[in-house]
Image (cartoon, rainbow, N blue to C red; front, side, top):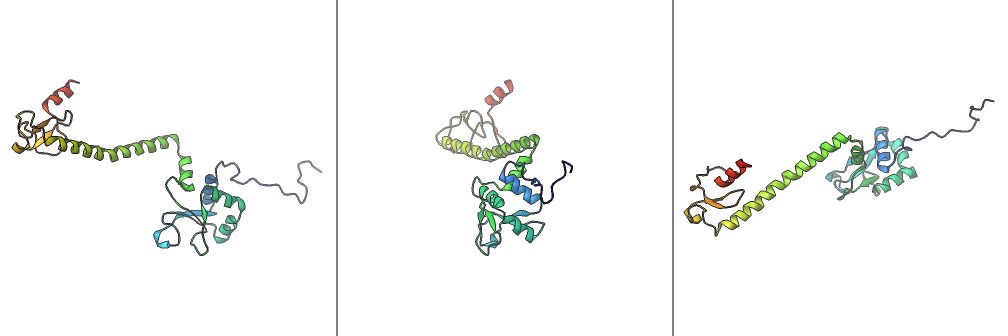
Length: 204
């Protein structure tokens, strides 16, 4: 008998595709890619479950495979480890993940792990740019409020008269008040700089 021949009645254990995966999120995402299940966003019209949560639904391999897969203790452990909750009887999904602040679905985790360094850098750059765009209007509103509060008691820096003698505008750099007529400022919206600040900026 040859040494490499497998004895009759002995089955070799085949390694699962998930054995080499590190996280439960990866293993659940692998089940999706193999058609065992899928993740669906729960819509408001479904009523019996939290709106915006992620439900575990039947994959492309059908109901029988889906039901058999979800009965496995290791699959149940993965779902519970990722924050999924078992739904009550009659619910449209047997398991669901409430998307509370700080909770990320397995699909999003898998996408994040699959990004290249270049994609990560681009994503971070886009995030920072979006934060800057959100903050800019707030900064301008704060500056405008300060300017408005200061304009009540500060006269024009050229003629010495207050806002009863014309419209007071403020230099965006030094914040000094001027009548728009005294400095011949154009009647358009936007940032305006006094002559002194323009000269200083040009000299830099």
